[in-house]
Length: 187
Image (cartoon, rainbow, N blue to C red):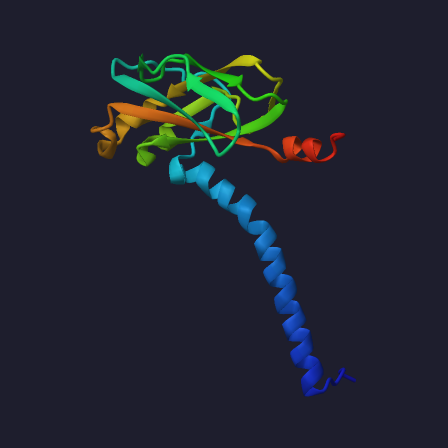
């Protein structure tokens, strides 16, 4: 015999199921959006490569480096080189320097993007400091490498013929680790 529920109970069950679905969708949205951006290059998200490009072309590309800090991070952060010219498919190594100018240990983490956005799917990083927490003591400096190449597939896309320069931009943010450790420090 089928279970018979009154109208109010059915509405409550549907509302509860809807709420659980919405909470689940909210938690899944960030990882799914991240995957979408990595696959499509949307928003300047670069590709992460596991090996060299395999082919180096005669086409040259100027790579511009940009560095920023968010809010009161207390760091000087800048590229060591402002630009470099590389051949498409050639692996290149750039460096950024961060210096803690504050009087306390600070932990930061960097996010990045590439412009023009349409070139992001062709900019491949082999090694990067992004999304890795960096803790700097007062006055401490660190040089952070980024190893990259421009994918030779960029040459096969007519819509990419006008791209002669790509900007790789990093922004450092203070992490919760610094805030939490400051909150628990003795007065």
